Length: 182
Image 1: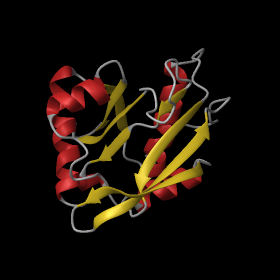
Image 2: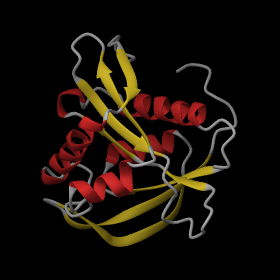
Image 3: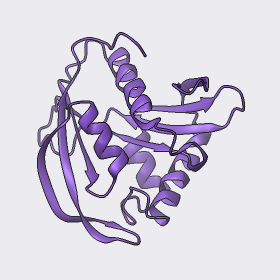
């Protein structure tokens, strides 16, 4: 990472799905970015967010600690077609002890490159994602990667400690070429 911390990016193991789910639920409990009722249970999460998707774990190479869990690749709920060409932007969570290091954009860039490598001849032409208007790190990252706001869902997500907040819908064309530096 930019501060010199070496990381390893690897595929998520089956036994880590529950840990990913628990991390997202913990973030929702503390009012950090995810809707309080967005993920009702582990089976729902595994079926809708993990099975058949691209899932990875980012680890601190020196300590082995998990830095982040990420997933993407599912068809966007906003595509409204049987054969969607728009993928959902997915989920990324940075573990609490690795937050506030300005790594969000770096990890998002890494994830974008991995998706491009995973699906080099894919029919996917873009990514649709959504986030709460109050989730500043994600909103700033989306701006940095040239996502365009293409809608707002009023009072669509319940954030603990904030109540019902608006959700921003954003779209980005799939990059034609990889960034020069990962």
